Length: 152
Length: 200
Image (cartoon, rainbow over all chains, first blue to last red; front, side, top):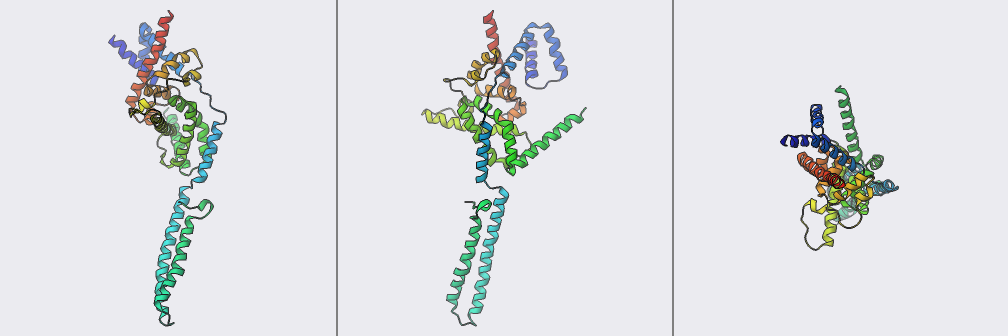
């Protein structure tokens, strides 16, 4: 009985996973003399055959629907490369805005004295008319149309 | 003799690597090919998991959207199908949990086994799909079989997945998967044993 139990485990393995040719031969030899295990093999084979005999019929337009949904979602999702490029361009533009504004701020300071302008008025003017447009340009990169549309 | 399996293995590897690259780049042609190849099996798996065709179709669509959104997470080192089925499974479990919580005020046990129980009322997806007398005989048993056994059996014998692939889908050790298959087989086999003994 214990021997049969071991063989039946081996029979289960033979159906569910790979067993060696030697083990297969062992089963064949055993079931030649053991009616109980032979029946066990037949019932297991019948069960597995039955499991394979469920036939599901999918809808005719099921694949087309999925493809359509995916196409719709792809339009909304930008490729990562494009997203990265836009972020990099934005970072560079932002950096240049501040560096450029700092430079222009200093130059304006230098020019204001010989030209007899009031520094306190020139420098805020530079900030408003230089830094703000630069920042706006950088932000526009994030809101570019089409493939370069904003990340927000 | 050993050259052939090696070649096949290399081909399989390059296939998964190609899929991984295509998913990273959101290659629509590749996605369309994958849908063509897997959609039928995916809906079938979800139907047997949820018991309702409507849920199965919706969840399959949701699964593909996840594949599109998170395709970069597929590394190409494992087969694509188990990865896809694992996404579908997680979505199905989340969906069924939410749905049943909405229906029942009593708290459900938090394990997946309970969530995956098929509704006892309504037509059985197995009876509708049975194409032989034996399949019909199994249909009733499958409907009430412990969900984790049923799932393991169907992945193994309907989807022809290896034990390792099933383990990847259900996120369980291979030994657990094989024990679920053997226990499930034993329960289903008894349907024929009983039928034969009643029949004479």
